[in-house]
Amino acid sequence: MEYAPAETDFVVIGAGIAGLRAAIELASAGRVVVLAKREVKDSATQLAQGGIEAALSDEDEISLHLQDTLNAGDGLCNPEAARVLVEDAPERMEELIQWGTEFDPEGTKLTFGREGAHSRNRILHAHDDSTGREILRALLAKVKKLKHVSVYEFEFTTDLCVEDGEAHGVHLMNSSGETGHMAASSVLLASGGMGQLYRNTTNPPVATGDGVAMAFRAGAEISDMEFIEFHPTALYLKNVPRFLLSEALRGEGAYLRNLEMHRFMPKYHPMGDLAPRDVVARAILHELEVSRVKDPVVYLDLTHLKASHVKAHFPRIYSTCFQYNIDITTDLIPIRPAAHCSMGGVRTDLQGRTSVPALYAAGEAAATGVHGANRLASNSLLEGLVFGARAGRKMRDELRRAPAKARSKPRVAYSNGPVDAGLEELVREMQGLMWDEVGIVRDGVRLKRAIEHLEKLTPRVAHPKMRRSYEASNIHTAGLLVARSALAREESRGAHYRIDFPAHDDKKFLKHSIVKGGSIWFA
Ligand SMILES: Cc1cc2nc3c(=O)[nH]c(=O)nc-3n(C[C@H](O)[C@H](O)[C@H](O)COP(=O)(O)OP(=O)(O)OC[C@H]3O[C@@H](n4cnc5c(N)ncnc54)[C@H](O)[C@@H]3O)c2cc1C
Image 1 (cartoon, rainbow, N blue to C red):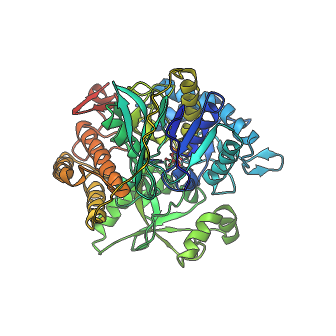
Image 2 (image 1 turned 120 degrees about the horizontal axis):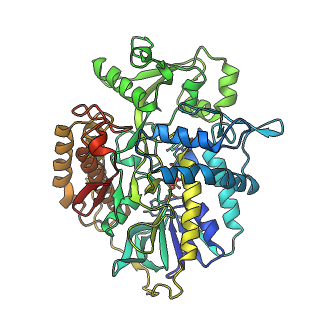
Image 3 (image 1 turned 135 degrees about the horizontal axis):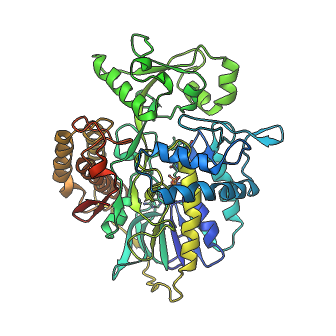
């Protein structure tokens, strides 16, 4: 097994779109170590189906992309961050194309698709519904050509090294449970999202909120944690991962039906099946609650669409469902909502700097305020690309020439101790709690109950020893951050819906929530 070195210039935690894009920027300035806690393909980037967007088509304008982003954010976008996102987007996308990303063409031009809340066709797809996989392939190919960048798989960052209030490297554990320390001049958190906080999620197993939890422990400011996007349509079958069924299916004309086969969306929203994601997710939840059957589902119905068209445009969705004996061209697809994307994370400025010196963050782990209270579909991959590059550039510019002290502490074989049989049960307990009490529809009573319950579990996650117990501890920390922020925001906005405060309260809450240690405030 090849170990990560004891010392480097830059550590990048995460090998998704944000981490790899940052590494490319850093390569000219020093040694770059990119860490992935499992295989590189275990990331949200790899799973992204729908697409990535930029105002590149003849009929589009950067100002329209900006307006759509601000509208989706429900008043809470950081306008500067949103402007940077849309202005940097065309150049970052041109680079991706130069580096070999094969976006789907139409003749000699690129094909631009559209999803809900976009005023123009501007979404690029690659290999139809495998956009993220293709981008990751191209970024990895580019990174492999760079002499100073090394990517290490199965290197789990257990914590950040912070001395005198500054980041100085990371603590690591490899797949054999051996621990070590890597000194670095600066550290980038590009560790992705936190869908695994919830019982139902479209996210990969790696998305346990490690970055946010580590940054919180290091004393960084964490922001906008209450804004979790729940995707309305994920495949729901027993013992099968909650595979995402892209919104583009409804864009192509798919219907939602309840157990009585009624098309229920028109009674919830004038746009029917094309209503905004949060509205559709709540409508489905309501249909599930009133169905009064055990383990209810609703269905996505594509059977009226042309089979050849469906197979041609959604090959990955078709083949994945087929693997579970569902032919989406002839069968109804059982679905439920699932936790999908986090808008919040480690608070950064527009260059990826956090409130802890030498600690940077980008991608889904970060909160620039770019998404506000709700993200515009297809802006997340772009966020990783744009802010990954910006963070990389800033780290390069701010490289401390007297690098971190290399404490070449040898790897220690850690005694994992007896396997904690209750660990998976504990994780399931926290995920169930988050789903039931801090989920799609919230209220103060349930949020307080969730916080009390999580606080009672603190002793059981307090001294992690194995990789999985570190993840359990991070789920616990990030879960508490979401619940506390959701309780503090006494209004409904974007993806955060409270039945006890169903309206906006612009006077008090047209601000971002910020948590640091035991304090929470809005600014
Ligand atoms: C099913 C699905 C479909 C999506 N579709 C779209 C879409 O069509 N368009 C769009 O814009 N967005 C989409 N998104 C969202 C988008 O994919 C993500 O927001 C984006 O890819 C996040 O990129 P990232 O680089 O921040 O993190 P990721 O791609 O998730 O990468 C995280 C990396 O961090 C590593 N890591 C995590 N913790 C540790 C640790 N403790 N130690 C070491 N390494 C660690 C992981 O191993 C991984 O390499 C989708 C998300 C999902 C789940």
